[in-house]
Image (cartoon, rainbow, N blue to C red; front, side):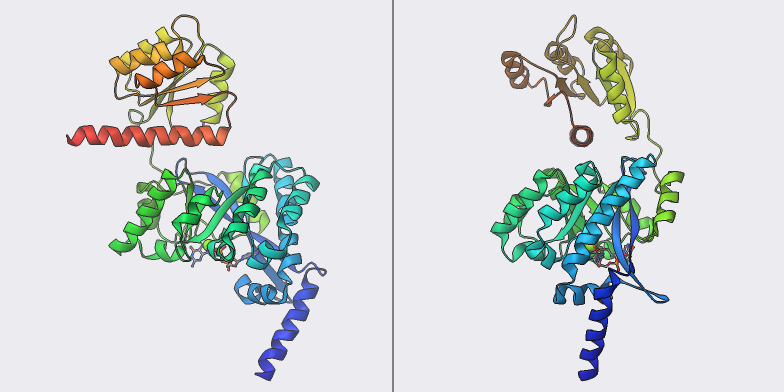
Length: 403
Ligand code: C2E
Ligand code: MG
Ligand code: MG
């Protein structure tokens, strides 16, 4: 016992110096977007270069947590992550996201809000590019104050995700209160999901639950093509794991980004299956929408007014239509009321800068519109809304099909 504890002391001392000596490093593991096959971002994973060996976090994070060293180390991780995001944006990778892990101690005493806001400001980072990965166990010590603290962090504009989901408390009460964006399905589920029907059921349920709560789902620990394909079929949003890429040193990660590495087996989109019609009289809006959707894999049709829109709908099978409200000729709601009658399977969305209440109410009560969205829009949210619309449309179509 003595020698174990003196070894521990020695390691603690060495770790306390590791920061100053610049022995800590971040590796980056890409997350692949299952909707378009591209790299969505990465998770930063800490490594300690101690002499000739590279020490993995499992060997020193528990000690750092116990001794409190995890607080300054964690602050360094957040600052370094923001520095990398800045450097990558300067090299043209301004859309990539980076997630960092937060420890329990850091969350309870580390003044995370200040650490994060200072790092964001110091490196002039778009806060939406930074994500914190938290675990349920750290939130469940004192869930009420966790909710408040999470809300403060959210107010900075960053993203929050729940790591290792399914292995901790998985309390639905708190899940509904925590202002999080993403669930990360734990690797223990992914590992067995292809062969074990119960576990496959759990993964499918987590994905369904998350989507109902408008959360994004990332599956961790994907090691095989079968797991990847299955997760894609279940509608999972992103995957991370050795099958796509191990955690990499920065230069190698950037090489993957530069090469625009894509997920294997990304299905070529069946053009007839996912067609989106955009109707707006402003060509600037049409091109901004097109640009924002360029990697989503939809076939996009555009029309400058309702009449052109109706013509295209007659010519082509369209699953989702998004229309402006104020246009010369028919208004958006008038247009979609016609679409409802003529093409009832096509899901209808209004994207409007302004709308008079009466026409909105009528359109909704008539069942002419599925969603009413406003300009200006948030790219990520709008993309998610549109994915949701395609999922919903597909579900409706399959019900009809089986009837
Ligand atoms: P985590 O946040 O759940 O990170 C995922 C871990 O799974 C990483 O291990 C990653 O290398 C590993 N992994 C990724 N894909 C696969 C796969 O396909 N199969 C398998 N078997 N494993 C895979 P790593 O880097 O050893 O990190 C372990 C844990 O240490 C992390 O779990 C996280 O909880 C913690 N950690 C890492 N970096 C930090 C940090 O900067 N701060 C804090 N507080 N904790 C960190
Ligand atoms: Mg993590
Ligand atoms: Mg995890």
